[in-house]
Amino acid sequence: MPNDWFEFKRFRVEQRKAAFKVGTDACLLGAWADVERNKRILDVGTGSGVIALMLAQRSSALITGIDRDDQNAVQAHENFTASPWKDRLTALHASVQDFEANPLFDHIVCNPPFFHGSTVHSDERMHRSRHDDELPLHEMLSHAYRLSSDDGSFSMVYPMERLDETLVKAQTLGWSLHKLLRIKPNAKKAANRFLAEWKKTASSLQDDTLILYGDDLSYTEASKALLAPFYLHL
Image (tube, rainbow, N blue to C red):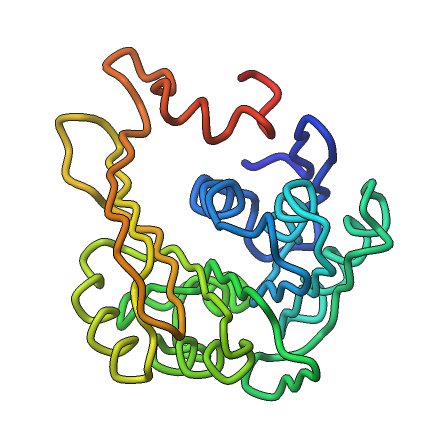
């Protein structure tokens, strides 16, 4: 059973009230998204607030985390308030579909619910956090486009088997793929996740692969370089 907290080098994430606990997907996105020069960032479906906290450590931006689950929003607010960056972090109980912003955001990030058409989870909050019933892929991409500035970016993590579908839907909405990172659990396995950064303006594509673990099940040097600013044991 997951702990009620997750300790990072510079902050602690309490997660007793969060429907979804801190996981590798969120940590990879929080460490990878290119936010160093951003002034305003939106974290959609912030959950415990872990991605927003990682981005606060990596930038000087004002960061808003929104979540349609009220207990997630409460948990994120508590974690933001207890962090070194409490003056730059805001948690709101809101869905992205109903959310309005002025000014718009330089960068939007999302670790979205991505199970589609699979077995219903017995825990309603867990089901809503893991399945895309209330935030389908097209809506996520569309609202990210609506809430981002003219030169804004959108970063996400998603299952590898949905990459082609994501490419088609994103490009239809006007997004241009800027960076792609394929995540392989180890050198012998196929990629099972991808991280993508989209922009509204066309740019050259940076396409890379990250092998997460070595044969001894320890992090590869590339994984350590990405996650070392955050993980206690790296």
